[in-house]
Image 1: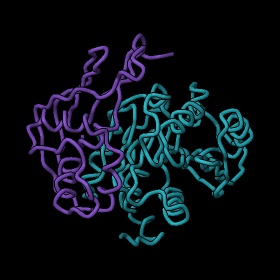
Image 2: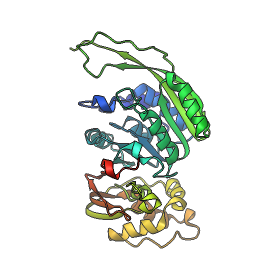
Image 3: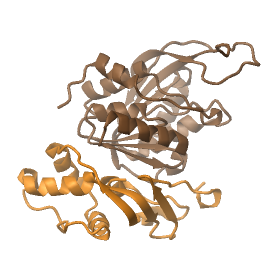
Image 4: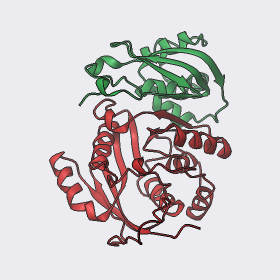
Length: 229
Length: 125
């Protein structure tokens, strides 16, 4: 039985390597250790949806969420991502953390909708927001996740999309519950040095809505545009 | 790719529907990785595993015989649970292929990772 404290989890997740050359169009950025730790800790301690469960991480990227879930005692954690470069880094991370309960698949999560019904206990994810010519991706991820999960889906979303998600949830007849709200600061990973700094409305709240079988975490992302070094 | 993971995967090629399971496994390189034995997790998984698919995959890899079905009272049978733990979690297919039973489409497995990316024509809209 793993009794990892929140601070320890966060500190270990800080060791996870991120993207070397993040791909803009895939909205690649690592989930920050603080957010990942809070999210996973809540899922584990409050809802008991990680330990001894089969967990899927959709859009796993370099694997922060999967690694955290594995450390909290998931029976098996399977990461899904479209990008082989990300999966390579994920593999390296898994080796460095010496985890043995992690697997990964390269595929397009959006094309899995309805194809793997109820095969995972829990789905966790930090899906692309759909801001880079990929509008609707976050909802496609959600739809896929809902199909794959037996018990619950835990997902991070911007608070500004909350109403839209609630509407969709009603349409899909799933219960949604906000579990937590977290501020999410994201340092600029992409080099927009030709532009002036861009500001986004900062809601600084991360809402998790829990639906019967679905738990949404909403996050507001504050983009900080840094000048190139 | 572990056999438990294989047991969860279906083909999502267009038009295949529910006939995309199980994916036919061929392996050219397999590794055994020790994984800490967790009897609670294994016992939980036994009723959820698609047994025929598991037996088929294990036979393809020439693994010690997996019983045709779980033994009665398996939850307390440590020998059985350890055997299943080994088959489901410790056998890692590093190189090989997964084949859609309906369309014949091959998905390569390389460095333990199945590549299930489809091209546009193969994807269900």
